[in-house]
Length: 396
Image (cartoon, rainbow, N blue to C red):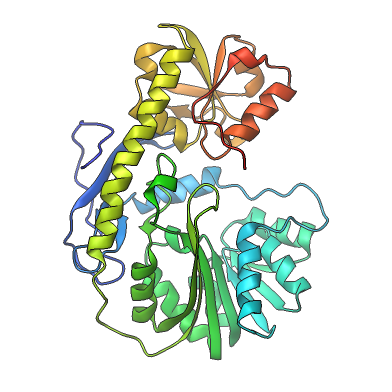
């Protein structure tokens, strides 16, 4: 069932122990070698822990590679003042505390980005604060949303906050090298009776998940069992775990938890987790096969094309399809100027005007933002027959 994007041998990276139980045992579900914009070749693999079922990178992307990725390309961009949009994740979190009668108190968000979620919680009566490792995020949180954030991650700043009533994380736990240690520090920062709330992608319903689910920035992949195990080991118990299947682009689970006595024996959820991995491998391969067929149908052999998008999706596209054997990649471009001038699989990423001036077909290389990119190209005057969408159109 192992899916490998390259057969080239590479130096063996350090193994990564299970973040829940510490075991190194368990089968590999996926392995990848991708050439990523600004980073070059990056290897990582996904393993399902035989002892508890936790699914995670092992071996993982080296810490220095991740640091460079975040430093170069992670964006927190808000363009104007005024009420920030209420995201579905924030709406779910507000609904969760409301449904359980949690009175507003002191809320601290880890990985708060531009403070948009905190703006909405403050409007609901909470006293808010938070942290983020991005200086740009901290600046924009104050400039646009009037929210004061601490610069740094929770290891640097959480112990200085005093006792908190609620700590929240939205799509952060999947990025952490040691989520158990982070949750343990959060527990120590809470006032008696304090609560933890977070949302993460959920390994459920493989047929609803996108191609390329396993990516370099997500180190941990949770289902309800692995989350319950992680929480129990860190000294929390679930109050509610809400799974949302129709969240774009993958199902998510939103959790509210309370302090409890730490446990040291996780439940074994391997069978369920491995069943997901096997089913998703079939789904993932079928999706990339479909992309390959769309390229062959839309582009003549040897035809020059430009790829719109210089993110990890393009790295996967070049590794998982026959695009470069079928067509000639004349340019790779991206709206994000931070990527311009960096190399991706031997191509230098150029500005959009330079790529569009070449003429020819434009392949939209994004699953998450395909519709928005295609609409933007149309609005800028690119003829519809030049735009090639690689995934099945979906209205959302």
